[in-house]
Length: 62
Image (cartoon, rainbow, N blue to C red):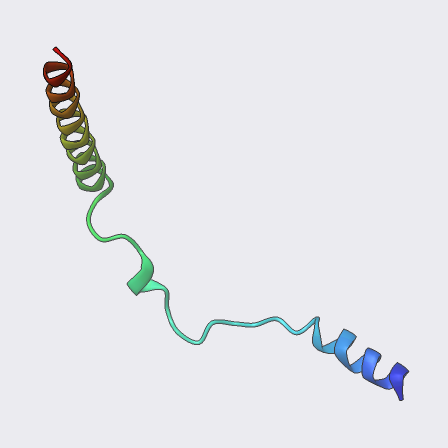
């Protein structure tokens, strides 16, 4: 009995799973250039906020 179960499980492990739909909803929207531009704008905002925070901390230490 154990050998039968093992053979079944071993055989079942080789079955490939095919997706039933498309992955269109998971793909990024917009062009590569627009997405990169958006990311760099976010980086600029983070850097600007960090500089402002650093300057405020530096002013409070004096």
